[in-house]
Image 1 (cartoon, rainbow, N blue to C red):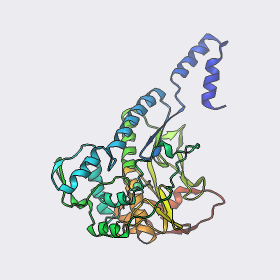
Image 2 (image 1 turned 90 degrees about the vertical axis):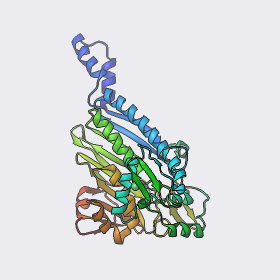
Image 3 (image 1 turned 180 degrees about the vertical axis):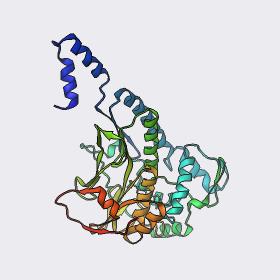
Image 4 (image 1 turned 30 degrees about the horizontal axis):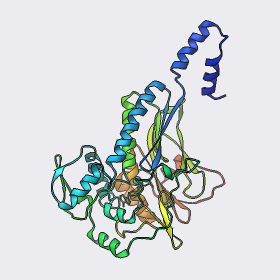
Length: 370
Ligand code: ADP
Ligand code: MG
C-alpha cells in the first residue's frame, strides 16, 4: 500500500480509539512525508513541481511558481506581445529605451555566457531562429498526445531560403551589440533580436527554486520537460533522475543528485522536421546559420540551472571536437555528449556520476578531466 492510500484508509476507518483518531487527524491535515506534485504547460513543455513533505507550504509555493512561470512564458516570448517582443521591435531603430526589469538579469547573464562560449551560445540571433521558425515557445497543450508526451515533430516543412540564411549569418549580431547603461538599453545593430529559448527555461527553474527556498522548502525538484534542478532529498534518500534516451523510449542513464544540482539536456529531438530524409532541428550554429549536424544530445550538470541550460546549448553547437575547450572556458565540470553514431563523449567525473541502463551498448570515449 502506498503512503497516500494508507493515510486515506486510516483516515476513513471509524471504529478506532479516540486518542488514535486524534493523532491521525493531525497527520491527515498535514501529512509530512508525501510528494506534492503539480503540472503546468509553459515554455512549450510540461513543467512539474515536485515537493517532498510540507504539503501546506508546498501548495502555496506551487501557486506562486505557477503564476511566475505563466508571467515569464509571456515576457520571454520573442515575437508575441510580451516585454521581450516589445524590445525586439525597438532594437532595429537603435534608439535607447528602459529595459524591462524581468528581462535585464537574463540579458546580463547571456552576455557573460555568450562570451565564455566564444559566441556559440548567441541569443542575439533571434532573426535567424525566427527564419527557421520552430516556434518552440508557442508550442501549446494541443501538442500533447494521450500519454502527455509532446509531439515534437513538425509536419510538412521545408528549410528556409539559403540566401536569407547566409545574409543573416554575414550580419552576425552578437550580445556585444546590446549596450546597457543603468536601466537604459539599445542595440547598435539593425538585425539584432533576442531569443532566450536556450536559457529561459533554466532561468525560470532557478527562480522557482529561489521561491521554494523563500518558503522554507528544502526538498524539491522543478522538472521542465526533463530539464531540472533538484534540492535536498526525498525521504532521506538522494533524488535520482533519468536522462532520456535521445532516440526511442525510456532513459539512457540515471544520476543521483548531490544536494543541489541542475541537469539540462539539449537534444535534436526537442523540435524538428524532416525534409528529403534529413532532420532539421532547433539548435542553430551561428557560424553556418543551419541546425548543428553530427550531435544528437548534450547533458550538463551544474549547480545553477541558467548556466546548465545555456551550456548544454553551447556545447551541442561546439560538437565532438570543441566541447571540451568550451566547457573549460564556461567553467562546466560535468558533460555528456552523444553523436549521431551513438558515440558517447564525456569527462571522467561525469562517467562516475552516471549509471547506464543495462543492455544498452554505447561506444564511450573519456576526455581528459575538466
Ligand atoms: P531544448 O532544451 O529544448 O533542447 P535548448 O536549451 O538547446 O533547447 O535551446 C534551443 C533553443 O535555443 C532554440 O529553440 C532557440 O530558441 C534557441 N537557440 C537556437 N540556437 C541558439 C544559439 N546558437 N544560441 C542561443 N540560443 C539558440
Ligand atoms: Mg539550453
